[in-house]
Length: 554
View 1: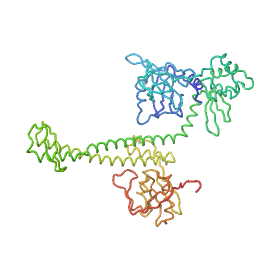
View 2: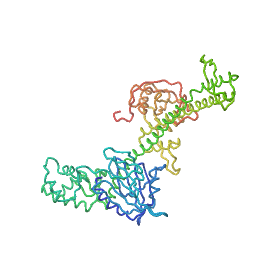
View 3: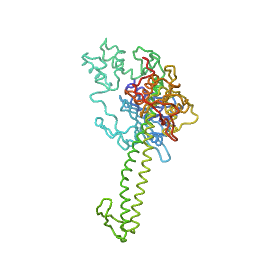
View 4: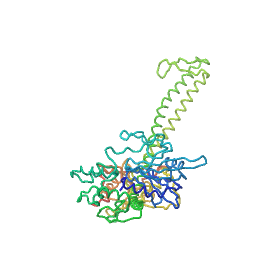
């Protein structure tokens, strides 16, 4: 439960960090920062602006840095390493925590304030200097028309705007008077949500139940109940069907099992430990997709640059002609002439050529010849680079397909290793355990069928299969290499396997997909080709509708 009421209690627990010194700062991912704080013993404070799992708490889980450090991490390390946490507080009735910090060095001391705004998709982590200006923030916003905030370095920091027409529950007489206007047309906790800030509907619903308001209509007792809940916590998490479903500052009425913990941070730690273990596969896939898409974006930009360079150099032939015309009319030119009029026998017309007065006639001709040769080489090199860029883009597209079709962590690990070898990801430590995945394997009409899960497996299938086995691949469409382990395979079996091959391709949602098939001995890998890239001959083609071989209806 991530409402302001919960973070009131979290802030109280985080006061254990006051007086502590920041020893290390990590960023496990792009929207999460972990501070190792030394205060008698080591604590790990996590602040996350993840739009789905925004949070702030002390964890016992280990955190690691990405291979390439984020700019925000480098900024925090520069300014907050060895900083002392003077004070931890919650902005009253808001999901915002404020950490007051002091950094001391040889030149004196400097004040900073770190704000953790835990507000769903609007979450952010913001470092503010002693003058109240933003030093840096995780997410930049040039301006929000509704919130009227600018979140950029150098801008004056302003807290998120308070909810209009709502107030805090802090005055008993006012609270009782507000409830006297309750008409019973809606649930009382919903009525209170429309009037007051700081609570999730479920929290106020539990307060109403605990106070017995529905039976007694005693508004004063409900106020006292809410006040008591603010004063002390009884942290816990709820387990249902073996899974932790949520965490609370006090026990809520629920059909699950309530497990009490010593601190709210401990309950949160257990909840997020399970949440991220079940989501780690999806997270890993998203990391790979992000790296691939970034590389594809670079390819697109490089392609645009190369095309512009080629277009710019396309008039090279005109430079050659100008050099030729000057050479043919060199007898007309004297040193210091600004131009020369010649007859252009290519266009069958008179034209005037501008000359460099500082060059001799022959040097003017050479200037155009040199420009021609330079542009010609530029075009040749750019065309070569363009071809390589397009090949890389095609390869990245196959990687993206492999990630989308990966079905296990070992699949992702193998793709990650391939990406490291291709230079798309930085190489990890050699000591890291090697995980191995195997091609998809099916039995079709008595034949063993292998379908590669990634480019490395595709290459291995071609390399290690008998030359008489049948090989299949979607025609001019990215997809998996498929091998039928057998000879003289009947067309009925080939068509059936072709449907599977089409399913594991970019055409999986299409119909009438062309799938080529030939023998392995006619499939070759060109020297220096990208992983998964082959050429083949003697192929035939069948047109099929993709079919999932793992479908339970089969």
